[in-house]
Length: 556
Image 1 (cartoon, one colour):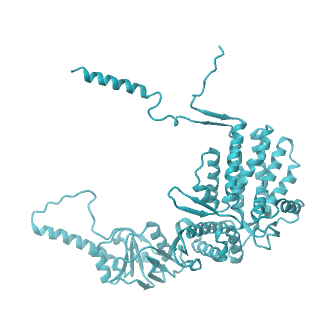
Image 2 (cartoon, one colour):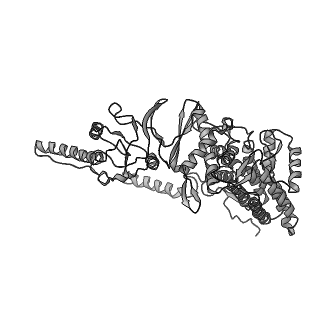
Image 3 (cartoon, helix red, strand yellow):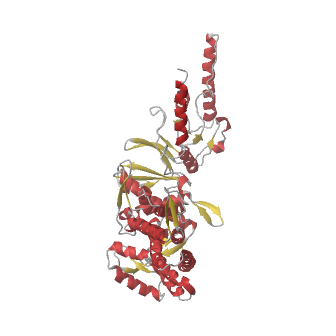
């Protein structure tokens, strides 16, 4: 009677209960430890070798984790966090992981005391609500048009990155680019589409100081016939097309039977007339520059160069959109529908320059461009990639400020204030949730602690001093100066963070910690483990093959 009952297949591995919790917490802590040293201005760089043998040198939390290949499921979900953070607000990718790791770390003690995970989660969520309330309290509004403040803010974001040694350079680039492409939506809202309208062109060579934001766009193309067409036009009239300027080929194979020789000439003439027709329609508007996304035949090229018009073919759709935004042209699909209003006259200069090995076409000096290109120069590809990542972060930060102009102190000051407030509040919480709530409060200190560690100062002393300063709630702006590790007033040293970066960091970290805590069972080895051809279904096939053999033998 007492035979064991097998519910799951033997091939399934099942872990449940505290074992899973410990495993998940260990995994998350491991992920957090990988990038813990990349937090703050004194951060270390990581060098990653990817599968193709290329190297990535970076300290952007998201870039590091993106390259890692992780086996543990909990660690995978931690990596998702930094990606979400990167897509949502663009900065704080490292802090999110460090904070989530710490939240799980402090929860471990409660799980050992056999607290129920839902209790811990409830306490954490309460702590999150209160933390956001504290953020709202200490956030101060900022004037978006005051360049100094915004510059300080973006600088404190990039201060933790590799390019901080170039001071204001990247910060300036980022602010210029985002203010250029900002679009007013009305009601005081501004929308900045970084992905669509800001193109980062990396050209190896030159110095980093040569990087600049163009008042217009550049793209990696030359005119179609370099000898005949002008390479420099002042105040060009630009027409943008997305149709081919060559004879239409049939959709599928067309056979035409020609009886007489003259018919052949008629056919050729038709093609020529068709192209000439299109060119005449375009030249009616006296353009100086015609750009098409598709092909442009030799004949059309001839007509254009005869009329002294420069032409560029096979341009990327995204580049075309940027040019349209920059010079105020409209992209036209059919040449016969051209209107005067479609011609772009906003650009001040079109020229083709040779940078390094390639020719680049510039459409610059635009009046009120709504799209721009950031030209990055630098000694090596790796360096440029890193600068681009930093620029991406910086542009996200300035976009966040334009969208939600509120500041909170950086340098771990916000986390310490939140922590101190939550500690005081925990006294008023009744029942069993009090302890996890207090633990969550302590977990927030992970950020300033890590900052202090990376500076190489005496962590315990610094933290105790900071806790003392924050405990009586006198000054919410006291934090760690990330460069020296000294305790400083963030207001004076101009170390700021954007409000929505911080809020997003807290939300993502705590919600993720709760999610991982609520996992109590991991069943692995479902279906996939079965190697093809092994086990069950393959049996009948063998038999039929045997039968088939017999059948072949019979007729003999």
